[in-house]
Image (cartoon, rainbow, N blue to C red; front, top):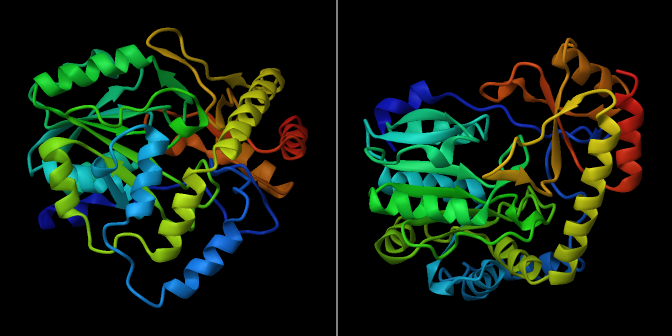
Length: 344
């Protein structure tokens, strides 16, 4: 981290509420968790009286199976954002330029700036056409947050090759890829993949995730990560969740069906974001981006909140000025969202 850049970096707004009286649609997390999580956590809590095994063999093996890579290439981190910071820290130096998509997750630009780098913003749907030459790194969010569209697997793989040939690190944020059946870039040469257990398994407070990288890049990430980067409960619950294939399959199907239903119903009141065409396509991301048109997004957010529903003001994303984002939850909860948004 560049000490001279810290005070200029600032913080980034996020969705999410801790108000128990609000129905949560502002954060894109699964409203359900895998079976037996409580029992695994309780058992791990007793083991937390000792330091965890810093090699994390069980967690790394489960993560490797989940994204189809070698366990030696898995680097445990306390959440996906920690994996992103680790990737930038080992490759971005003061003055370096980094290709950053927009609108997209605001933490990319912040993390680049914390290293003294300079984000060069590119429309997320044009990013794969950008020239990676003379950039230290490029970032892809797949599926993209907050738009929800995903890159064609062949197109993003080809971009990864171009980045490698240009000696440009490709940082692939796959926080939401687990909601789809699309392949991961994990194990691709010259790519640092960041994965989070927060979204798919509905455990944002657990802080468990991992990076994947090969060769010298993987060695650098493994060396630079903090010792005991996962607490024992996070490591054991994380490994348990990553092996719940039936839960993952059921989640994907529910999100696919409920997202389609929300898009169809919300199209009567809002302009629903949809990709124009290749290399992007609609994906089963657990959220929907809505254009409020002539209505003030802040007014829409407050009106929904007054009726007990929290949605995300998406004008905090670069390039958006008339948008809100809503998560995809269970059928009954989604019915309530539709009821509220029909009257705002």
